[in-house]
Image 1 (cartoon, helix red, strand yellow):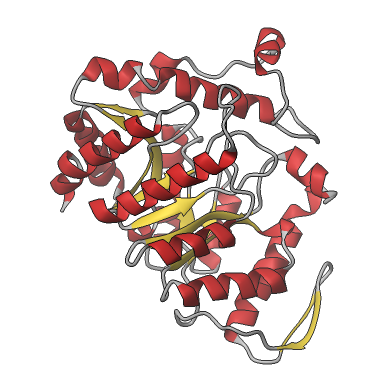
Image 2 (cartoon, one colour; image 1 turned 45 degrees about the vertical axis):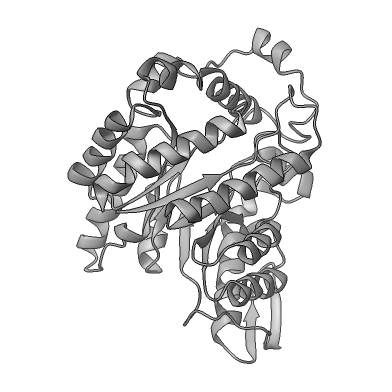
Length: 349
């Protein structure tokens, strides 16, 4: 089994320090992940959000490439409708070259109405824009004098430089949330999928199981070994501490995530989250119910048991862990990563 680190770079209301500290800690976690033997790091793209302050992925992945040697670099994911496809194709190709062929290119449509509103992009156009940008990026990576005529983008005989180092191009992963249509698109294009740790465990497993079933029905090989299965993780030798310490951090994440679904425009930076919680009508699942399945908080042995179940019952061969989220202390994150690497990963090698 392969293992990935997932980073979001949260900046909570309680944190008055400059965001540069968050970036510095994230980079230290990446370097430590490579040292500990993780196979890849995946970075989340978010805009005007305290949940994650990586607004674009290629600059940070390029920076990580300069500080690492072996760990693969995952865009998790680039929201294609927000980008000029020529610019994105060039930037991603450059990252692939600078990293000596370590880029994994995750792509998605995005699901936050307010991000589309802030970019002044019609939310209902996201599917068509996504398809065009993906077609153009792949075309520019693989074709000289590339031409494309779409509803949103027109390209006439263009060749870009540099071209990606990986051939025919960096691995492309398609993000899916809850719909079978996205899975059909991935299978049609022979792409592995990416799922979210925000989606409840049962729903996420239903998506991966459906992916495997439809690959079989279409006569195409499953790409499960290339698809990291992401969950929030906190590991401690003390079970009580493992389940009590991250409660505040994950509760903040859940509250903010519920709030962001109500936004049509604006940001998550200056919101009075405490006030919103007092008047909200939708409540996230209880922490105790989340501990049962969705959250991988516990002892190393408990984490091994849960991951083994994913492997045995659902064919999961690639597990992605988000150790740093919300109000988690950097030192605690590093300790959890070390314990996971020492006592969980070896059980699957």
